[in-house]
Image 1 (cartoon, rainbow, N blue to C red):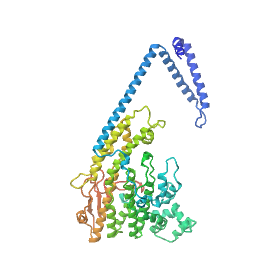
Image 2: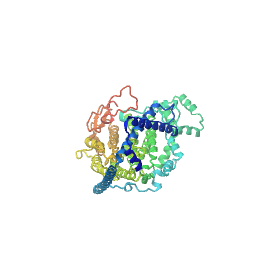
Image 3: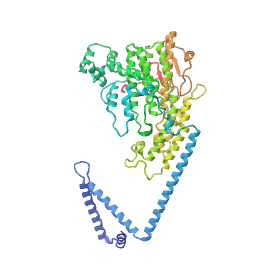
Image 4: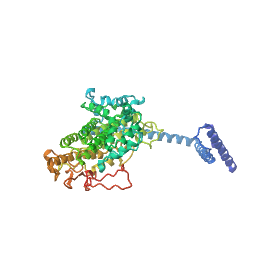
Length: 592
């Protein structure tokens, strides 16, 4: 090799003829190499290879060859070669020193974060947040209804999911097909009732859900189309048509009622798997919430308020069943289910379907839902979960792409060897600071809100909570941003406010049934117990008597401003599912 380099240095190209021959030879070799490579290397199927591709590739190879030639000529001198090797050794030494310094700085930052966490009572080990085991006889999760879910959650990640898991999901579907277009379940938040007539028409003109078809076969009906035609001929009301379809889910609700007798709930989540833990039970819970909301609303349409109350109590029991799980997604699923379950409560109060005893029972159920009490515990566990995920990224168990998303190169190793592992410690330290300095103080302010004593969740705290991890992205914060930026209590605040508004609405309806009139102000309801405050401001909820039969009830939205409790008008070109959230969180507006 040295003789070749020496010969290149001793016999340089002289004259234009030598240069023309060298360029032509290099171009010919590049074209020949490109043609041979195109024959040997598989290419995506297409009509033909464009000649311009060969020419451009050949030019690139030629330029690279000449650059290599001049580099070898320059290095042919022994002094230059020794200088290059010395410079390379210096660079490698500096890089190694930088690695050592970065790892040491990360170690010190993580030690300081551990001391800070201990001072604030923040446990950094995920296992300390895992709820203790529960005897099967007291565990709702071990009921026969959830056995397919339990089997899926306890399987090793390498094994395929059991088929009965998917069959159990299909049994809870209200419609047929994987991506069906179905009518809405109503949206009380925006003042929209359940479109019962649309649901009746849907069930009469579309394929029935798998559970309904199986139920019909068990009862000797081989043709669902003939059963639908018979329903059309009976001239039933829309609610009665839907009720006939929903009879197929009676067994599921009976099994759920039996399971709800068990006082506690703990699903066998494999917390030790960390990022790979399976949470399939949340899908079942989400579909059960939709089913219960739908059935309870239909019961109210048919005047069966007792049945509606019984099923709503089952739904609220499922909401509370997830409260012991230290996982943010579990809290969000329970909140989503709670918002759905408030739909029949809202429609029942509008249509005066509830009596005093039923309203008192609903108010009692709602008083047990305290999402803001669960939020500090869940946020602390989420911090420990994110720290464990960072450790798994460093050890190679979790790929960077799973956390960073598409910007991460797919051919990276799970933690590139050329990045200091001290950066992971720096990210862990910044994550702990984020939770201690921003998340926990903001959550505790909203949790302990008392009128005239605490200011509540101030809008500036909420804005800082949402923007803090995004203020700067660096090697010390890129994992913190990816794992902590998704956290926001605004959904929890809105859902807890919705529960508070529903409780106050139940009190208003009880007062109306007892006295024959609406209260002039919320102060008339305080003899029955204290009322929840506005979670954003700490002041009383907004109430105004509009007429002898109508009232307005709302809370300020996440901006903390009173915008009058009015819903924006719906543009005529928008569909039913279009989100048009009002600035305030509204239970009942004047137009309702």
